Length: 112
Length: 118
Image (cartoon, rainbow over all chains, first blue to last red; front, side, top):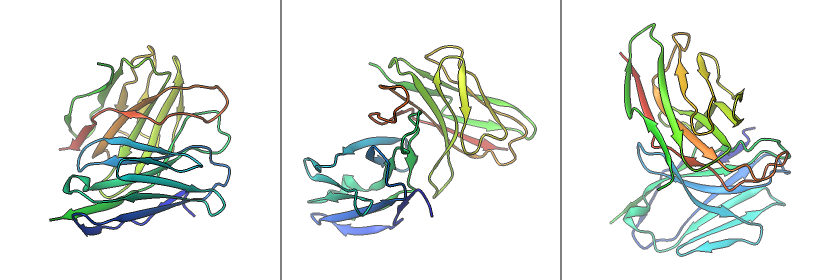
């Protein structure tokens, strides 16, 4: 089983739609969680950290479910500019390094 | 502005040639990393370094070498032993807040180097 698993998509949604991605992780003791956004042929950029209590940043909401070991990202009122690949990222459990484990990403395509 | 700079943006390598990719950061980050990304695939860790003069192999270190002589710099050499080097190479850095405990605020990435074998 992969350490981090994501549905590769693509998710094709119209402008204004709400879309949700899920990501599962295998190690129950993982400590930190993130969503990154990667545009085509560009570097990944941190979108948001994911906290146990859930967090929101404008149209984006991230949730963590430790019991089921999944992380979600909800995008409301999708814009054309949201088209990108969204990477789910976790830290290893009880590691003495800061290595991050990246999922392979979920591709989102927003159409007019 | 603080950031992380990779150069060159595009690099062409001939068969049997060693090439070096540059990565420099002025964020005062302790840790630096090299990843490789192939089309349609996730990021795979090549090497990482948590402190000057120390580095560790990642998941796919064969055919690569690194050095960390300065905190700001973490160059990656792709040697002739790397049989399939064509890929997008990403350098990243992060703050190490607490030694011995995996707690961080994510990575800052450079803009990447596209390496092609010709």
